[in-house]
Length: 199
Image 1: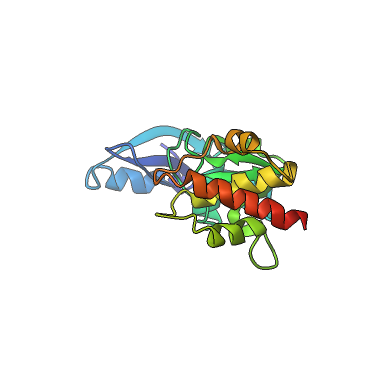
Image 2: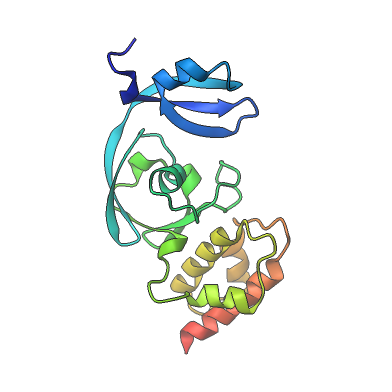
């Protein structure tokens, strides 16, 4: 079918719909039965992208429709950004795109362009960010899975609105779901961080 199938990738999925990986077509053909997987054979040639992540320009090769989330996690090994729902509804994958809180699972790599991406790994270069410190002081995390997304949304909020009201906090954080229900501690931590930043 192709002269060199290793230059082409296809999506590999478990039967329950969980995304496993992007792997060479040749590997898929050999393993699709034994691994209990099905394959999306929408084959796309890889492209090269120069993206600005945490202040550094990185070069990655990826399919144009690869979500930024998977570029961060699989290509650049920045695993602080979490996969939650895959449909931009839970907020676990939140990063900053030119300073704005953005769901990275719903943003394909080909649409990023020259915009600046910041992940949880890049929000502070000199120790903990004020929001991270407030999270510790208010004992916000329970299971912790959603917390990087919560923190990224909170940092974007107090950067744009240095002294947010309760209503502004509720609106800004409404896209971030915490299944442990730590919303009151999150709000307290945001207020603490905002006061710290105003000093």
